[in-house]
Length: 485
Ligand code: SF4
Image (cartoon, rainbow, N blue to C red; front, side, top):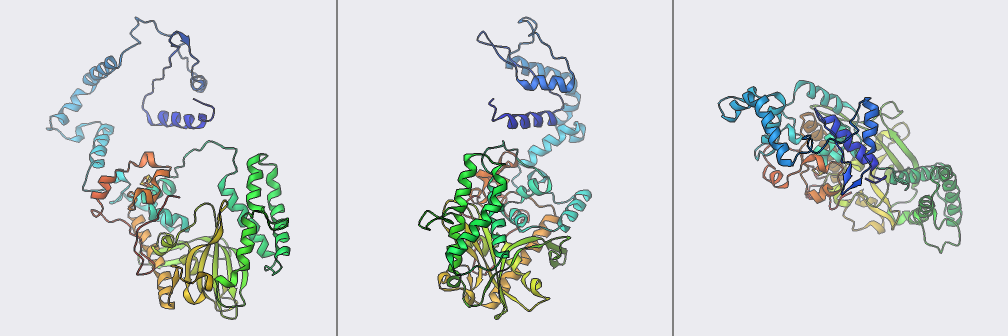
């Protein structure tokens, strides 16, 4: 065991203790004649339990040293003596599982259902039919506002949603000296929010560079004391490179962002756009703007979220959404078109509400700015009316030809939300319906506990209802995300 693996070992040790009815701990004292140092856990445990653990190893003839075969024989003898009467009726198939102790009966039922090729069971995350108290719990859960990231999780793999969102499971990660990737996203969002709040971008690129550099410096400065390492210096460099100096240097995320912004009118048609007319718009319970309510026969689904930026064209009465994705991966075109990534169409449905007290505004689309920390900053994907696209976006697959098709896409996203609620409330949390590599199984935190059996899953695809994404455009065929997150 190394120092780095200590947190993991601690977690595993806790899991063993918490799940066992009885625990016997032992540790070797000698290896090839050399003294070994006992695990510090034993000492911790002794302190915690105030227990006296034997200090001296038993002698060789005290029968404390048994071979594996002897241990198994001994266990068989004990089982025979203590449990034979209860096991025999089951083994002779003349009794019933009622005759078994409850935990043994559950284990047997679990193994049978887990190998079934005909039905999903509660041991596969399929809770249908629901016990009353679970139904009530799920109903309350479904009544809470959902974030688009949660919906995406359910669409991609429902059992993963069960583990994470309903059971609250998290993988313990050893603390690392590196700057957490989530912080990178927070910093970029904060810097760009301030940039637009201070005023619209001007044409003078040099001036804008200096302005953004100043904001970045102020936002990043407090973290100098938190991350006093080379990692942090590199992180800052990735964000701010090229904001100062001659402009010929390699450009970081923010300098590239400014250059992308300079081409705004090549990406979007029409003039008079007010970039960043609204930034960091939150719609959630308890805030000024309430969540989006999607009404359906089985109840209302409320969607909460935060729109990074809304650009407004007052003359045309149009608005578009810009969402910043900071990281190595952003939603791909088919993630949006196939109804896996519902964020943009749901956010777009909020647009008329955001401006209702001022002027009538219609959404014309939304795009993801992919702010890749190691690569090119670009407009990645989105959902945009063709008439709103400038020359730089012509021919992109995420353009929607007509107003009707665009409205239909937004409506389909809401249908998908209602369908998710229906499946979620019915307790359906089976394995992913996508290919494991597409769903991100190789990188999934729950890969060791979900017990995905690919051949069984394939055989059972149509046995019981499972959620299937609704493509936003009738022509989009669902194939699933191409690569793992
Ligand atoms: S490993 Fe795959 S099937 Fe299992 S929980 Fe993770 S994403 Fe779902």
